[in-house]
Structure formats: structure tokens, C-alpha cells
Length: 79
Image (cartoon, rainbow, N blue to C red; front, side, top):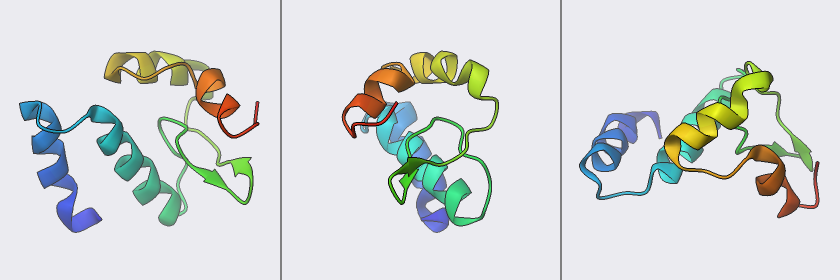
């Protein structure tokens, strides 16, 4: 995943790939390397993995065109 990160980032910037794909890759790489995630897209063992600066996560999600975290978590019966 890390190898393809810049490629995915370029596809998002050119409009050829939805930003949500970059969000997923970003958070997965962070979680796999024992860091807090940025966008709140990763659920581990039925629980939301810790988020860096959780008070501003909805702002970051809005900037990239995603719904608020609470709406995303409803899909997984989490809140």
C-alpha cells in the first residue's frame, strides 16, 4: 500500500479516483503502523481505531467530501 500511495494521491488530484480511496489507504497505513488514524475510516475488532485530533475529524472529512463520522459509523452499528 505504501508503495502505491503517491500514485493513488495523484489519481485523486486528477479527479480519476474518489478521495475516499485515499482516505482508506491513509488510515490503513497509519493503523497498520500503530499510529492514530486521521479520518476515522478504520474499525478494528468491532471498534473505531483511535483518531488523531478527534475534535476536528468531521472538518477533515468534510474537506475531502465525506459525511460526518457519526453517519459513517451508523453503517457499522457503531457510535
